[in-house]
Length: 482
Image 1: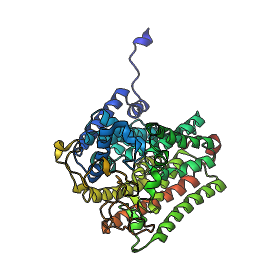
Image 2: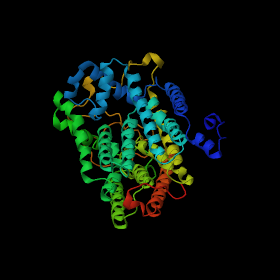
Image 3: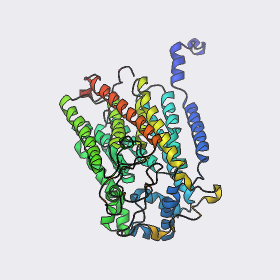
């Protein structure tokens, strides 16, 4: 009894440290709620802005689905794959105004993206405030805000799926590793179903299969998920050739080395037919990826949490930097992954996400204050997609056999030489033209080049200096000096 009634022992320094690193659950959720409120307030400032992509494409797709319902899926009226169109169809069936609804989808993806980023960082740090910091950092990245609230684009959706896949790849080194690997590949399949740009990070899957961290059969989930999500439109009566050729048509639509992207081709002052440069860039990307995979099989560097994240980030930066026909938003996954990877690396590597973000801010500013910003709504009264649209918008202005294909990734970026949607060099042209932009885009491309070099240095560090003892156990370790 005396012991029960005695005064509690004074708190030690260790106890105080525990309270700082492990705050009460209620406090953590209050901080999360405050972060979310501020993030939504910031995004609300842009929610009524109508960009060219919204008026020319996204609102058209909404109108077609609103007017025709399920029957709209029997023909191609958009060049995005069907899962995103399902979401837009849901907005129309719920009678949610198109502008508000389309941006709400993207903003919701921002929240999921930040949450998954926090979950990944939580695997690295025992301090409960660190994941909260990652959550806030991703949610307030300028490129993330601009992509969703201002531009109304869907890049956050596929990137959230990619990041969730990475989370389960990290968990595949722990308990239930095979199940986690299968879930990871299913999430990568979901990402691919939303955007073709998800393939930029697929080399990490090849690497982990070769290193036997991911079983080969888990890769079957990628096509299974992709095909399963197309089954509803097949049932609705869509021709199977059109259903499964969406991405083939996208890759054949543009013949410029760069379309507003801050990649290598902003730094190459060439003109005329530069098809050989495009093929050289594709070859360089293939050689780098295959070379890394071969080196990894021969040298067998350890597979750790930092190495998985850095390999994924390196792929997301280097691949679009070298490939031709890249649009301004194709580094979106790199913009988020570089921030998450920085939590697993020494502080000096924070320069990588800083360079990537600086490049992204410049590119977004060029696009959103250029051609994209040339068509703005008139405030709240414009919600719903009202007002005239270019080219006499309507359901009949969608895909036409043998005609042009409207695209929300159209060739309208600032500084792309004034090229419009479609093939550069005229209909049916198979050659590439430069597409190189102004001096500012060259500066942003230089920043991305330094970021690519930095992530290659970080990759070399994590795959060559990690303790080899972690390979056999499959357990993750911290990067030295992180």
